[in-house]
View 1: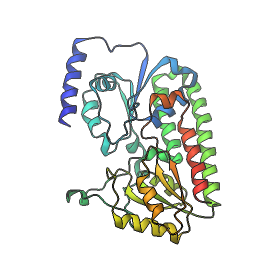
View 2: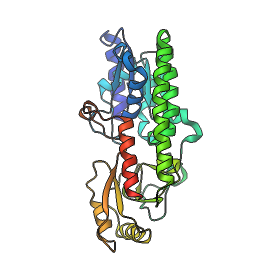
View 3: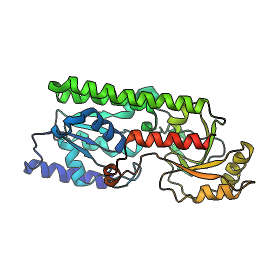
View 4: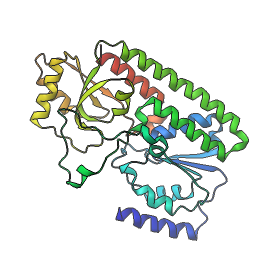
Length: 317
């Protein structure tokens, strides 16, 4: 945090002595990928009229991202700044309190969702971190709010309203784009409902940290996982492995799941400890480590969520 405060001080000095950050275009700064993609869908053909910046674009995930001086400068001068609002974003408070643009619109997505935000959940068999005792008294909230299509619909509408404030001349255009995009989100949500409600199985085993709490809650899907969604742990205990392997056997599951870019070590060890030892290992995409190359290659929020549905369909058959 001290490093971030020092960076903020540097930015304030820089902005007070130069006009380099002045721009005719309205600027929108997004910390992570899902809201960036929602913004691009809202803007549609009007993207050229805005300077839209994704800060977390080099594969660094939400929990380890630290803003550079350039990032802080972009936030400070932006017209609309959108961020998740969880524990990983604590640095944001200091940055926006010193924003150069005093008319800046800020969207804290967790705050905007209100009581839709869920506390971190410890399920049976899950390995917990040996944190300081203080953490036992403080509620920790699950930051992975974008992994709910229902949340995505709410947030897309909220962000659209803010964009319409920035460019009221084209507000009908943004409304139409928003309606079209929300209809796509809603259609996919209905596909999830149909697929999971008609699946033979309703439980998944996750050999990894589990950032999909919102998704599983949306569709009444049960899960067992090695760690909570925001865990920094990477080594599962023998007890955790044995518990998850036994669940695979007891529930007669044909798959063990991980998040994207996992080394699959835990998942493979779980499979090796089952009776049949022949379960497949699938990945669900949490969209936490997107790169510019991913975006150029056509990866979108909708495509990621569609792929996740196909994975769940295979895992729950």
